[in-house]
Image 1 (cartoon, helix red, strand yellow):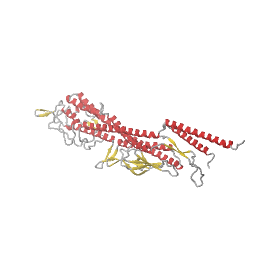
Image 2 (cartoon, one colour):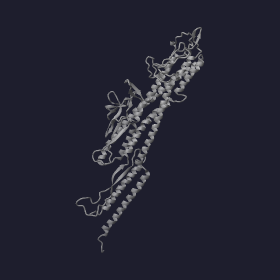
Image 3 (cartoon, one colour):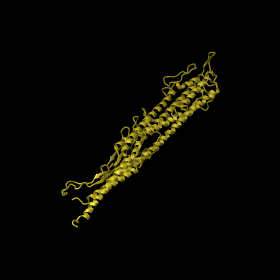
Image 4 (cartoon, helix red, strand yellow):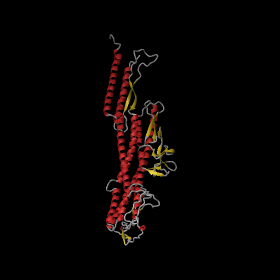
Length: 559
């Protein structure tokens, strides 16, 4: 037989449940501007009806509902959208990093402009052409020296600036690794806290939100895969459990970063196999360490079979900018990367330019040479600071090339043995033909199979292009190729960065449509729950009047 006070209990449950819903709505409104917060809702659940199915159940027409209770307080989240967001976030981190690196390089190279290397070298070639018209003019010779000094200074500026930015990327890699390790530690700590709450049948929604916010942040640095592992005890079916996070390489390889309350760290190994954030000159591997900083097992290779296999993300973009080690066909280590390759090209250009110019310059005749048997080997080099010809190493040529400080205006070999008198070739300091030969260097096609002949010499003088680092095209076309490649790479990085931004924004909007707090919706819910609460209170009043009839009105018949 049902209880006389059953209505009171039903109404009381309704009031408590609606009150809980109002409090949850208030929590949503309070966190409307909190980053990473997901709106929460109370899952209303009907309480067990009366009577329950049993052998001694009372015989009444049917089961009667006994009210409502809050089954759980659940946050609104769509895990599929989280996966999509992290995938796009990962791509954005990579392309943003590359776009930033290339943008800084474009600022340094400053092409096309009136101040870039192309313009400075153009002025140098032009000064030689002017000298050809006035080879005995002291002023024209001074201009050639000044323009040559400007070319060397520009090489120095470009080399120093690129080196400085490359060093900054090394520091940023170190900071990035610290951020990744800090994030994995925080996620592991949250896994532990969640694992302590869920077994008791609760949903730690605020801890879930904080953990997902950290995972979102981690996904920008490296590509990750997140799987869930149920907690022990008696968790609810909708409990999320702890996160198992793996780093995913471009070749599909997987490395554990976080598993429950355990986490691993990334960095570089010292000689005693301890964690270090000191970035080497070029990166070959990223090492894995346990939470105490001790090196574990195999390292994560950055390159394999000449292909970058490291996980996509901001960290990979930074390493590609800074430089990484690969092995060429001869098993010799070569440094690749955006900045190392540009610096290497710049060194090739400086070495080829300086070496070739010196070689041609040595074949001419300076202003004071009057003897047709003048030993041209005594001519001074125009540029110093290049490696010895026997070494044929162009490394750091852009840093070391400099105008020969001992070279005077009269030492510039602008003339050829260009006129014949009394059956003998004479030196004419005023012919200036060799200055033309020097100015033509910029457009010579540098092929080992060709040896251009110099004008104004008998017998004919040629210049072999052997052992020069630039094998094809001219000095000008090589530099144009460098700048062209930079422009194309920067254009691609900017385009893909914008595309990734749009895609991530699109996914984020979808995610926010599910998870974010809508004040209009919350106000509507507030009114809805308040009315339900008031109605339940009125029900108690009605039951109270019914009880009053029973207690005070019954048994008075006939009085």
